[in-house]
Image (cartoon, rainbow, N blue to C red):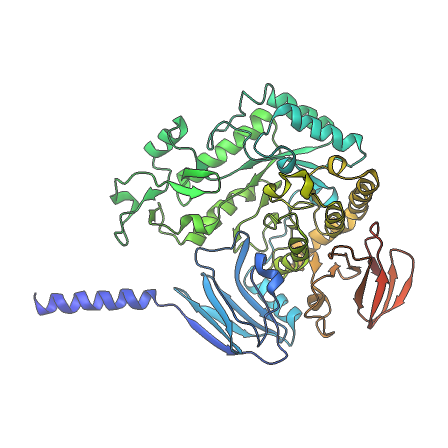
Length: 537
């Protein structure tokens, strides 16, 4: 080979390798320092400290929920990257690496709140908009647990009628997976819906707004699949050839495994596909009167295989493309997100099982969302959203459903799915109804906090350590603040009828009328019907 050509070839290879090399940051963790962030579904593991031994790689893995390339410290330190990072807490050190891009780190102030205020303004400022107001002011209702894969007109209407007849306030009702015949088909199944437009009109007349479940997958061997493949709007199979461009391949549509089987997937890196997808969504709005969408799937793990897209993208980029679709619709909900903090998207915690261990994750996982900058949040479905937990009536725990409703009641959003009036005793159902009414009563305040968040980035609900950063509350995981004035302390342990509450300094008036002088920890009595909360005086 000519020496000149050889030199240029080696130079190009070296340049390519250098471009692919990411940044690395190694920090010593102080003995009294705590860290949060990265993954909302791992919030219950936080805060991390000098004794922690854990590693997560965000490239292609959002762990089923919101992810953010952000870590924050109780000492005011921060880590941020525009690209996926891998972080390890081990032997008193925090090591952060990236495949590409720069890792920003530094210190702003002396505590978690100082660091949070800095990063939310610099890296993900709020845009001044919020999701639909009803999502905050009224309970939500999802048909998933009651109907599962048998979404049909008669049972949806009955569910809605029962909500009203049992005294629950109407709100947003979400029609979940399997309302259509095939994924990618944008019409209601004629086998299960005789008059979908009339059904939605009835739901509207009862005071509901209606959301539909949708995803980025397309059933193969269908008419819409053949059209999308012909038009180049699906992700393509790779052939292990690096850096092959979309325009230079004749490869077939990729088939991706997900929880409902094996499907093709829309290539939302392609503006043509984005336009087509929104046209289908707008058709559902115009033709049937649908008000908004629950946009499910979109997890980065679905894009880690050897696939080719219109724009060369990381798996996490594909999660972002899907999330950006929802920005057009104020009535939206996501479970999987990447770097969407500060934007008017509803972020729900991933499906939880119907057990006490998962109930105990709700508060810390929700607080992790807040610390990561996701402010418009919902703690899954009351009693759990993992449908397999509800297949056996004998496994239903009434106390768990009640305590779950109490956790939800003073969160930014509250979502029912399993029908309390079907699975609970009259007495326990009445407690859930009171929680729904409490959320409605507090709705105007929650909405005000959402509007404030849209301007400042300040979370609606906060971990104690964010609201009171100098008070030693870093390891508290079972109480939280609604705004700066309402301390909420639900019960999350089976059989518990008392609990301890850590009170910040000042005077606090309890839901029972008791006045408490703060700056101390007290044990309080919590019968099953009580949700303890305290207003700062």
